[in-house]
Length: 570
Image 1 (cartoon, rainbow, N blue to C red):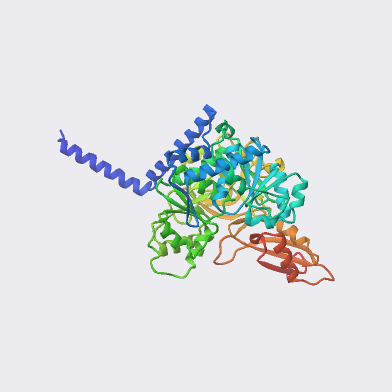
Image 2: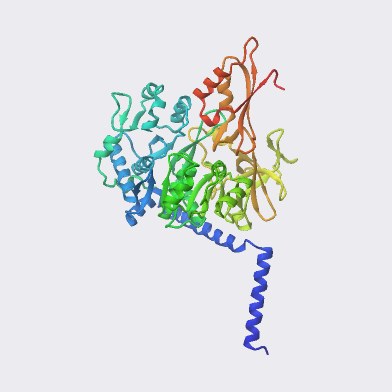
């Protein structure tokens, strides 16, 4: 017979042995379990929405937070505090202005063209309270693309920031011809009869809540936003964003361990899903505070973090490199930042950032605006975009398949089906389209939606979303981004459509033919644009004319950095 002490010693030894084995062979077990539990419980919450046909939307959550913590700072912009109550009441005023006008009804689409400022959020939420879908426009957009965007989402109303109205002067007559109402965020229009001013009407509008029934949603699949991405046709595509996507994005900070007492620094443009859906949505989901910046400033970043006691910041890879390239200063580690959430952080920059600014937990995300799959590096392992495991693969069906770089298509077997790569090999990432992982596509074009799908991938009748990204999954189930395929590349945090740039260059008189592609530049994230051009016979290359043309017709991030003059195609 063993004594109690001997039994306890044996149990303790056994537990210690299990602990050692777990650390050796399953080092991420408990972190995986904790993270997966969060994903599953949140997923169950969303499934209950389907069963009850009652969706608690992002704006519903904001209204609840405004009632629960009305005097807490929600947005701090240029030193001015805007509480949850302030933004709630101002968004009510916006809603009442449009209800009084009687020109908008539930389901209508309104285009929003504004830089980062508190009124971006107030107008967004106010229009949502009326029951409208809102289309976010990239502020770099040019006139030709702008008219196309209205056609995509069927919008008949535009709200534009006061600092951007000059960009529209050339096309205001066209907008009026198409019966598009233009509202500008200022108090007087200077005698211009083609636009209506919004701020003076907001000032005198009621701040009483509009009926909640106007924004009520019964399905997670109801569109609530349109966010424009680069299109392969040369024009932006309106990605359909539903309540399901906004709710998933708003849970991002929480899934990574965000708390109500966090202060979130958002220097990214709100017209992108990262800043709006994850940044603003994630802040209000926590009941936290957001430091909203009009633009990112590397020289002011750490002083802002110290001033506002920032604990979480959003980034793209370039942002962290800019910080590392700043001159060194005393007290660079004197901050409260504990977490960065973003994407595109290269391993070398990651190491430099940690060495210089301290062990801030960098939480990489992977996912496109319109995609149906997301990876999250909840472990914080350097250089990877996400982590998978057996259970994750049961919930989210994805595969890496062999890809022919020369033919620019997946490799097929004798039966015409795609071939999976082995562990550690690079392959094209495909995500299965299903009831739990739907793909909502693009507004106004079934053809563009269909182009993003691959059918009959592993069996007849199946459908997968083509991410267009080459990835690799190692033996520990960590996922690494390798490269982007197809006719887009990423530069300065934006997706560049080679077709758009090629077509624009083709309009230059002395250019016979142009081919645009992205090239890697040492010390920079993404790829810079290079245009290989053939000059027409009897013409000379005119750099000044070319420069003036691309500045006029292309946004800054899409302008070629390099020009390569060729005599023939080869």
